Structure formats: C-alpha cells, structure tokens
Length: 181
Image (cartoon, rainbow, N blue to C red; front, side, top):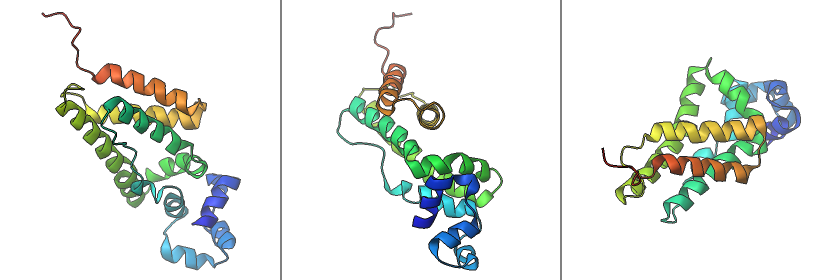
C-alpha cells in the first residue's frame, strides 16, 4: 500500500499502473494481481482503505459543534494528498466496475451517510433540528460541496467547512420564526 500511496502523490492516478506499483513495491506484477484485480482496486485500498475506521461525526453533545466538525472532517478527508490524487480516477472507474462500485458505496457512502443520519436523528430527538430533515439530501449537499471545494476550487478548508455548516444549520433548524397560517 505504501508503494501505491507514494506513486499516487508523485505521478497521479492516470500514471499509476499495476506494473509501476509492483516495481515500486519490489514485487512481481503477478504478485500484485493475485491480491487485486485491477489498478483501481489497489488504489482504492491505498487511498480509502482506512476511511471506514475514521468517524467523521464528533460527539460533543452540541449539534452545531458536531455538525461543524463533520463538515470540517469531510473537507479535510478529500484534501488528503493520497485521497485527492485518487478520487477522480476512482469515481470514473467505479462506473465501469460493479465490485468497485459496491466497495466505494459501502465504505465511503453508506457508513458516512449513516453517521450523519445518526447525528441528525439525535439532534431531532432533542428538538434542535426539524424531524423531517432529509438526511440523504443533507449528506449529498455536504459531501458534494466538500468534494468540490477540496478538489476542484481549492478553497480554504476551515472557511469552506464553516460556511457549509452555517448554510446547513439554516436549513435544518426548527422554523420558529414563521408566522401562523
């Protein structure tokens, strides 16, 4: 994995090959192929293999703080050099590879989506957010913005996370300022 990570940060996803990974690791190409069916699978494990073990959701008991840390964690995750080098290629390759699609869905999407949903449900139970908040849409908004901000436009990570959190808070808080109909 160290060889694949080094190559990703040095030459980028497009230039990494099973041959270059084997050469960098000091093993034969068949050795690499015995463990992984393709470059995309090696790179996915190198870049995202531990993502499932790192929770993005903080647990301070203060919803705003926890949401802000979740947003900051999402932006920082996509800014990690190995993740940033692998992300676009993995996203393209997962459309052509059903096994990779499932792995990315389970590790990156489902687990992190569930963490955010649990954070929102807990806040809703305490009346901090509306109970009808669409957690899937909130997840898509948060991750999409974090991904774009980290990989495409390169905005300041803390400022992006703070602005994103403020925007999301406006959308999820109870609407007590509405006039009765």
